Length: 193
Image 1 (spheres, one colour):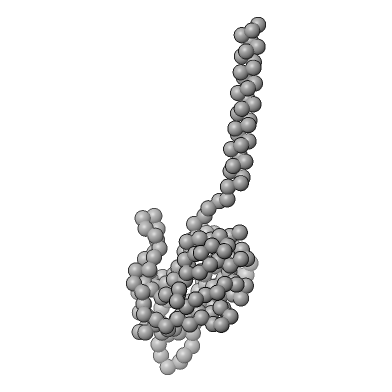
Image 2: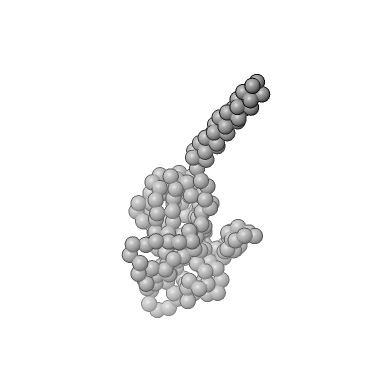
């Protein structure tokens, strides 16, 4: 009788501890925020899907709001057909941050992957201008940037207070007599709470 009571007690204790341990473990999982890489997702849904929208690749070092982050806005060789003498990055007004031109660079990029991280390989000498309301970055390289290499805009800034998705648009002006900028594509940036 004593052995049976002891076995029932041990089974009940183990069950109770198992439930407690499981609930503690589940509680830790629920309170620990997920940490995702600052790369775009594999699937992107757009309400107004049109042929005029072109998705461009980007990488961010931190996606949390108000955190310092490095943005790598990348233009792959397939994203442009001509050299450019001016690159404009359109930023929505709701992306409420102050962009310092000292922390913006145009460079030849190394795309990251399984074996390495995204980074600037060589800085391209250029003049950088930021509009007073921080809705546009105009970059004027000293010489036309040729086709065939991956080029990117590196920006070091603090993420905005408001989490959400922000569409940055890329416009480039080709060398020639007509000073018209053409649409290259858009980076759809996500800032997490």
